[in-house]
Every structure is written in C-alpha cells, then in structure tokens.
Length: 270
Ligand SMILES: Nc1ncnc2c1ncn2[C@@H]1O[C@H](COP(=O)(O)OP(=O)(O)O)[C@@H](O)[C@H]1O
Ligand SMILES: Cc1ncc(COP(=O)(O)OP(=O)(O)O)c(N)n1
Image (cartoon, rainbow, N blue to C red):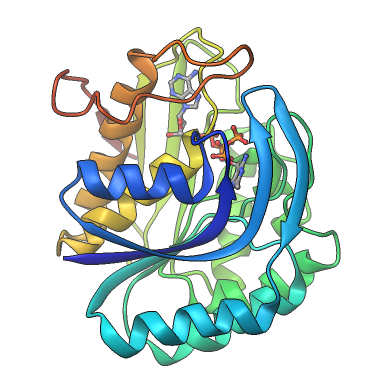
C-alpha cells in the first residue's frame, strides 16, 4: 500500500515529512512525499524556513499521482495560501482519503502557517478533508472560539464540520489532566473519546505529525476510519512512553516502539 505526505521537512527528524515517513514505514506502508518547505530545525526550535514554490509543490504532486496508486494522503505544514490552493485543487481530483493536520505553530513558537493562510485553509482545504486533526490552539483559530470545556470541544468540532471537514479528531495534548484525552466526531453523528495516561515528558516533538501519519497509514491499508484513529492513538502513546533521549530540547517520539510495547487505549462511546 502507498501513502502520501504533503508537508514540511524537519531537519531534526522528529516532525514533518521525516516523522510521517518513519510512521508509514513502521505501519507497513510505502511512503511518498511532496515537500512544501524546508525548515532548519532541531529539538530546541526552528532556526529558519524556506518555502517551496507552489508550482514545484504542484510538480511533485503531479509526478506522484501520475505513477503511484496512492491509497491515502495527509497534509502537515503547508505554510502559504498559494501552497494550500495547489494542494486542495489536486486533492479535489483524487478520490482518496485525506487527513488534514492543520499545523500552525511549532512547539518553540515558530510560525509554520502564515496568518493569511488560515482563511484559505478554511475555505478550500477543510472541504476536501476526510478527517481533520487539530490540537486545541489550532481548533480555536479555525473555529474562532476559545476552548476550555468538553462542550467547547464539541461546539468547535461542529464548526469545523460545517466548514466541510467530514470527521474531526480534537487532540487533547494541550489540555491539562492526568490523562491525554482525544475526542472524535464522526460524520454519522457518533462521538467517542480515546484516553491514555498523560506522560510527563519533554519528548513530545512531532506528536501531532506522527499521530496523523498513523491514521493515514491505517487508511492506506484499508482500515475503517474509526479503527485507524484508535490504532494511531496506540501508536503515538507507545512512541511517547518510550522516548529515545535524543537532543537537548523537546526530543522526538520513538517511532520504533509500536511493535515492541503494548499500550492500551480506553475508548468511551459517549
Ligand atoms: N504528554 C502526553 N502524554 C500522552 N499523550 C500525549 C501527550 N502529549 C500529546 N499526546 C497525544 O499525542 C497526540 C498529539 O496531540 P497534540 O500534542 O495535542 O498535538 P500537536 O503535536 O499537534 O500539538 C494526541 O493523541 C495527544 O493526546
Ligand atoms: C516541518 C514541521 N512540520 C510540523 C511541525 C509541527 O509538528 P507537531 O507534530 O505539531 O509537533 P510540535 O512542533 O508541536 O513538536 C514541525 N515542528 N515542523
């Protein structure tokens, strides 16, 4: 099976294209990529960014879809309105599942999505998203509201679905509490939460990229969306529980952990 990531490069290897391709590999999927930007980045932060020309992003996508039977795709760092336009136009023509991870700001505070690109993301990318996986700050920006309670989470998800995203995973990494709880809203109206123990660690660089790549790998392998989302939560939990101890800042998660360790995900159908 073949999956595609459309995202930025993280020279430090913990997030972006590198995290996505490692996750695809671990989950038995052949990974292809269209790179939207280069970042000079490590576990301490983003030093510099060089965006790709939108036409070159289009050229990469054309080359991939011309040759490969890609069965699922994901987006990560898209940076500019023009790149989002190219990606949305391409994905509108491809009838495959698309996971949109609406990456906006890196852990160290660097901007990975230009301010003026938020509107473009809402107008052209969310309508082609099979599933959108915002963290809480991203959901606040896209939904235009503050999120503090479970009912805020539900209201924000409804707003994103109204913009066209078919299914939503509201990630709870940025919330507080002893557990890391993600809430999933499916297009059939069902809602469920996924709970794992919150791990006290600095090694959480690239958690969102890895999680969304794992969902994409599941979809590329033909899993149902719900099954792919729950397996992805298990994958990211294992990757956080067993850190690699690399770098001096927010270290990368451990993409090799999935097959060696067993992590339980508690699923609650609300
Ligand atoms: N400290 C943690 N312990 C356990 N799970 C976590 C932790 N931090 C994040 N997660 C999980 O990692 C995934 C990515 O979430 P999040 O960190 O919110 O995304 P992002 O990297 O986009 O900010 C979610 O499934 C979230 O619940
Ligand atoms: C190139 C690139 N893409 C995405 C991110 C952000 O990744 P994310 O999974 O949200 O992790 P953190 O930045 O929160 O660690 C990135 N840093 N670089």
